[in-house]
Length: 418
Image (cartoon, rainbow, N blue to C red; front, top):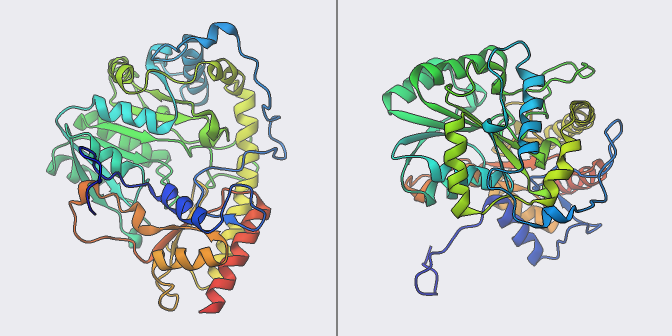
């Protein structure tokens, strides 16, 4: 790709979701358009949901919060995050999170960017496929070297503990970045496997950086379990200040407030201090007024009710999406155990629909947006010549059921045309 025409600037690529939305907008797409269905979206439906707490639709701003936020975030909110994790995952454990283990940032990307800026001159492992925004994040910061770890569809996009241990030791990894559950495959590391991941990070002194933004969208538990099943590596940390486990989450997915751009990082105190220093020159701190409003969302009863409603609603949409896609001849290598995405294998569709980019472009003619699989081939600086996942696309069941049905109807028309 050619350099930017303005002196001194490089051409910055768009992440997958931004690219597909931009391309669709050229053809008339707009948010809320009654004829379009955005099955490429990376956000959940944000309206009222049966059984969920009432949605916040008004915010009163305390004049004190017109000032800049502290870089680490308001202490009260930081402690609220720590208290919630201690209640959900650390009851009875001697080591407990406090506000000093929490840093507030302006969304998931800001939190991950702070972490990337604070990393030293190391090898850092990441998985393929994984979240599209990791690519540019891993490209911009030159202190560390990103090392890809390939996940095979034949293994259900999972990696064995022995293989991961070999990667860490053989490649000298000092950090490992992963989304759990994984965006785009929906696969999940949980229970004893997750406990062993944390133990391995502790034993091998390899920092485990987990993006847990989908950790309440879990479909491996009972549909009617009370409380609902949530998954976090926080449950397996022994000492919150010495175990090299860093967790990132926020209001975007698990509370369905993506527009608030409010996230948190749980980590040892030393890491929190480092990323706070990075935040002082990267972003200057999170949205201040919204931090006070977020306190009520982090009340345990509120969080649990929201999670129960999410799991009922999104499990139904997941099963519906899987059924519709399979009826179209689209293969799903591994059913999503979490998230609100289906990693769709297009290889058995007739050419040219078996190519993810063509599938996306043809879908636009039916006013449906998907995300081509090549965007999840995290390839910093384009160091690898061979692109993967050209025969895949990501289909989101994040939208409301009405929009989801309209989108899948459009994809069905598309497959019939060919």
